[in-house]
Image 1 (tube, one colour):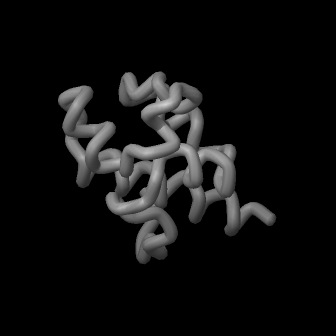
Image 2 (cartoon, rainbow, N blue to C red):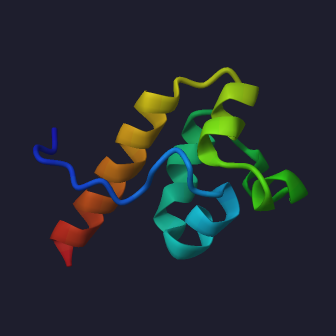
Length: 76
């Protein structure tokens, strides 16, 4: 478990922008069943909107996304 996770991704960020800036986030989105990362809605929808639309726990998704990014940054 990663302690002191730095908040890089927020629920208000657009899905497409997040994927473009942080490609390592794709696996987390897919794991949670948010497979529309490349669809037109992803360009206009926030992570929160996408998560709610797919019945995904927003807080858990954001926590896992940031954990993934923090792990990658520490391994560099």
